Amino acid sequence: MPPALGFKMTIRLKLICAAGLLILCSAWFWKRYYLVHDIGEGPAGPPVAAEPFQRVWRDGPVVLLGLGDSVTDGYGSTPGHSFFQRLAEPPKDEFSGMKGKNLSAVFSRMKVLNKSISGTTSSSVVENELIHLHPFPMDTLGVIVVSTGGNDLIHNYGRTPPQPEAMYGATRAQAGPWIVDYAKRLDGIVERLGELFPGGVKIFILSIFDPTDGVGDISNAELPVWPDGLAILGAYNQVIAGCAKRHTNVRLVDVHEAFLGHGIHCAQFWRPCYHADDPAYWLYGNLEDPNDRGYDAIRRLILLAMCEVFASAHAESAERGPGG
Image (cartoon, rainbow, N blue to C red; front, side, top):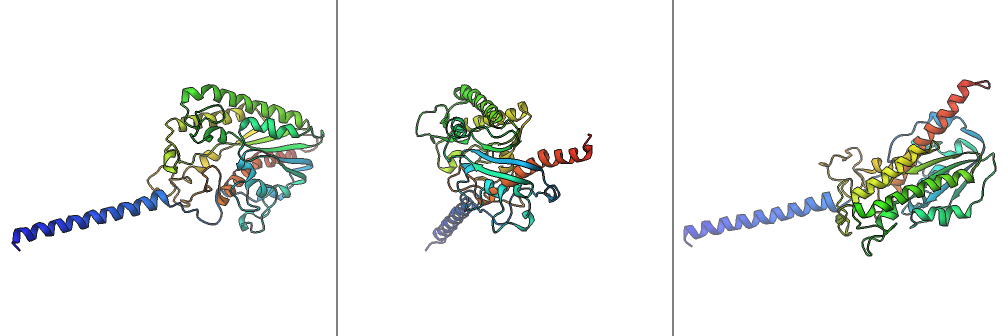
């Protein structure tokens, strides 16, 4: 073999090997940082202090009421591990750091009702959930947890033209009137809950998480491209935050912020929302609901909000004393 031909074959072989190595590395990189979602293990979400749970928040009757969609219904969780169940009673395998940190420890006369229905949209809260309730006695305090609006956005997954409460694929302009209607529905829910609980009501409303971690590439989850999806999600979350600002008895629980970095890009260390301490996937396989660790995080976020509302008020009342 002529030396020149042998040299060319050697170069070609090296190029082939380099190309093969590049393909293998690219495949590994894609799988490691785009396809494989490690859910992690152990506790998830912020720590919750023990001190607020060392005293009773209310001696009188309390109704813990769940409303909304599959997030409150606990779809995707294993038995006993939805956020709503964990709020009321600890699971048998409760984390050591969360023992005693539940509502049974602070509401001595609590009744638990979960009226949420998986798959429902925001109008269903009134039409299919609240409609079955009757006003509670004057001595009863309502403690309400609501998750609604997520299905308004994601249904019908692009299989049908965008429409109210099934707006997947809509433009921001097209969704404008539907977003206004959503705000009105939330105000209506708050008003109706006030009628159902004449003795008082505290409402904790969850914002809607973004499975794309702020990137907006929902197509990477095998759904149709939706250019304005992030803008419309942002508008819905602004409506939820606005509802909490307008009504003194409504508190925002910012699930959206807490879940950034725990969606489909959770392993990508170059993202601004990457969590080096827990780069884990908090979602169930359907992308719409949390997994057990995600529900643990939501439970903690709600408890922190409730501590601010109830434990702080209890402490202020104790400081004022009977004549305060």
